[in-house]
Structure formats: structure tokens, C-alpha cells
Length: 157
Image 1 (cartoon, rainbow, N blue to C red):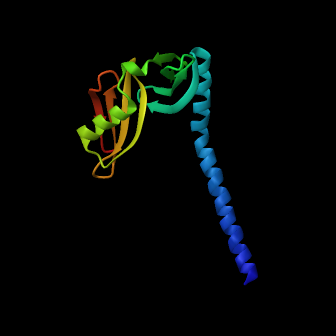
Image 2 (tube, rainbow, N blue to C red):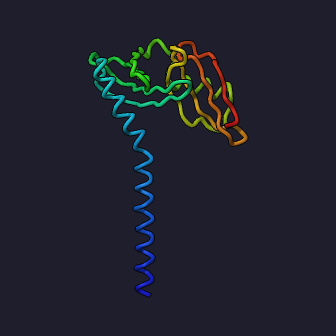
Image 3 (cartoon, helix red, strand yellow):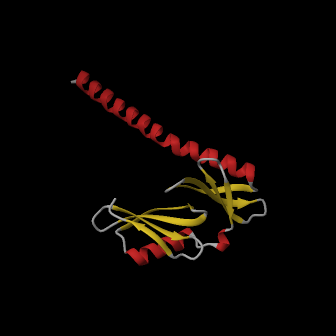
């Protein structure tokens, strides 16, 4: 009885350790991208504090951070994955993430909003709202970060 219990505990412990290892390994690209983006943003702008990190993928991939600069003003720094081109946005000139989510919720009436990311489409700042449709499939609603108008909607993924 005691031997069986010890064996069971060893198996459970092994599964927990293995699961933790897999989880940590799967998060590494995200963590590395975040750290590199913060470094690039701080080297190329006056960003001092980071509040949020975004990873946007479409025709090109962009990593973005939002935070505060040395003057305690909010800024968004977008870094192109290939080439490292840096774009700095003043959030006051664009709709916020919460407004983008609200627009998507009003227009689409999705089951659930999953995530919101900022990026660039042909040099234009956009918000991408990932959502769950009524049929359980994913959708991506892309809208202009400047005016909040619809640009495209990708459904049934």
C-alpha cells in the first residue's frame, strides 16, 4: 500500500514538473519578444515605464509597448519585427484599447472578446480585436486606431 502511494505521488509530481517545463518553454518566445521590445523602445525613445506589451501579426509582425515617457506622458512604441523600425504614437491622437473593444462588441456582438493588440497595416496604426463567434470559432476585427472605423473582419478561423 505504502509503495503504491509513493509511486502514485512520484507520477503526479513528474506530471506537474513536466507540465511546468512545457508551459515555461512555450512562453519563452513571448517573454523574449517582450524583453527585446522594451530594450529597443527604451534605447530609441524616452520610454521609462512599460504598462502593456502587444504582439501583432498580419502581413508583418509588430511588437508594441505602451507606457510613460520621461515627462510622465503616455506613449505607445511599435517595433517592426523584421528590421526593428520604431514608430512612436501619442495615445491621445488615437482611440484607446477599451474603445476599440467597445466598438467591436457593439458591431459584432461576439460571445467573448479574447484579446486586443495594436500594430500597423501599411504604416497605419490599427487595433486588432480577437473574438469568439457564436459558432465557437475565432474572428479578428481590425479597425483604424485613428478614427475607429472598420477596416476588415476575418471570420471562422
